[in-house]
Length: 325
Image (cartoon, rainbow, N blue to C red; front, side, top):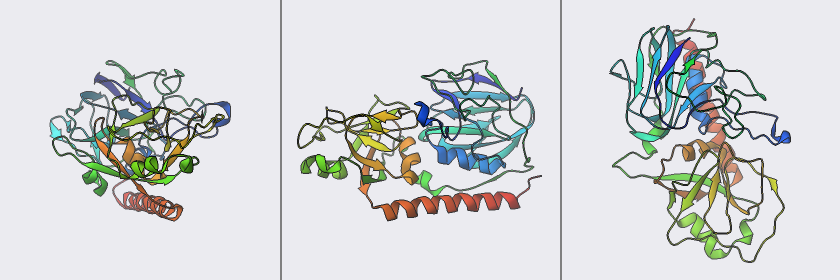
């Protein structure tokens, strides 16, 4: 066994970058809420980008490593310590058997990812290793992790021999306790945009939306005391394909940003869609924090995604020059 869970809070699961090629069977991609952080952590360890990791939604969390390996934490800063020594997000470290990693308190953002050399060893189910909680399959026994669970890792392709890290400038823009931040998220108008009233369209782009506690891995519900997004006229829609990032508006007028575990079909009108390059940023907004939407066009969305991919490729190249065998 590689590691034993000593302490865990709600919604800690094994995840990957999502299932591909199964939407035609009614199964969504699922996977991590923040796939950018998963890919980054795996790149830092020389893993395949879609290797399985632990998605940790809140501290406290403690795990003991039972043999030597290498780890990387990405995503949220939860005040991590390895045997009492501070452990910053974006750093890859070798660890020895018996060492304990602890995530103690929320410092920044909403979800942390623990990546291990080789990736967490769980069965491939429907083209993926991620936990599908509603279906009860994938991940570790199709469920959340519990105290006492013991996990294995795949055979590492390479093993690092020293510490190294990268600085993710975007972390500075994410919400932190006692320092309120409004997260800016870029989005494009979606299919039924023109069917909403002019007032609703203006409110969508100009309002500061608060992330409701009635949010989960399927979707993030947004609140605003004075903004209800209403249609010009009643609209009957057949169910149609939907994807993470789509912003649906139920009859009550409160928008929902669809996330990793969204259904493959839905019937609510769509006012906008978060661009792919910013979906990870939405996933890292804590409950109760605020966000605004910035309207962009397709060219901007494509350029943003290309820049993100180029940055990840630069990380890959730098890791290849560091001490890996």
